[in-house]
Length: 332
Image (spheres, rainbow, N blue to C red):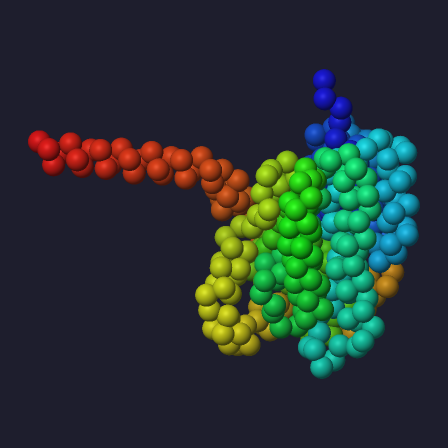
């Protein structure tokens, strides 16, 4: 019987990371859980163990490269060689650019971009000599298309995308069997929209349509075992990425007109409310945010994407059949 997979997940205490931890727990995996919030991490560990897996809690800030390296070592001491590393931890600030501060940009970059770099390096130091393993970069449609009011987050995701491309080329050059894949997410119903620092006049929301974090988790688990370099989760992510390639100027004007209201609900923000930019908020927030009644837990586009090889083969077979049928009718 194959040994359980050893997995590390950053940002594992809530949202996408929490849903992904549960998904690997169902597979009986041994999971290293990294985040700042101890209560959420402990709850994630209990869920994994109830589902048949094992977990170790590693409270740390991914902006600290030494702490990330030490966590990787602790996971391998406890569970053995890491097979899958998932970079997911993120921070954001909702704010017009002219109201952002240097410390806002620095902090978001340190976590949402450099946290991925430190996690990737910790994984590579172990995977590269063994010539096996997978690194999953949890991205976003915003890695390709920046939107107003989230400049720091969009910039960090763009940076991750560039880092991913460079790394993959180097692994190919080296003939390495270590795999790296980026999973580009749509709008998701996670707790972040009530956690992040915000200077908006109204409370923030994901830009509809909204998906549940379990859809993201399914894509991440699948991607970790696939041979893909990148996967878009849901049609909205693909539409944003493809549309930006063909008509970026149109997207600029469309977002200027619609991108502000689309990110807010008709409820005033609470000035000075606590946020998680520099320290975690207390309690266990779980995987879901406050938009359950507006979120879907399935994605037909994701399922089609996962099986696109078979779909293409089927389309080719159907085309050949119709061509043969047409030729036969012409001959008759």
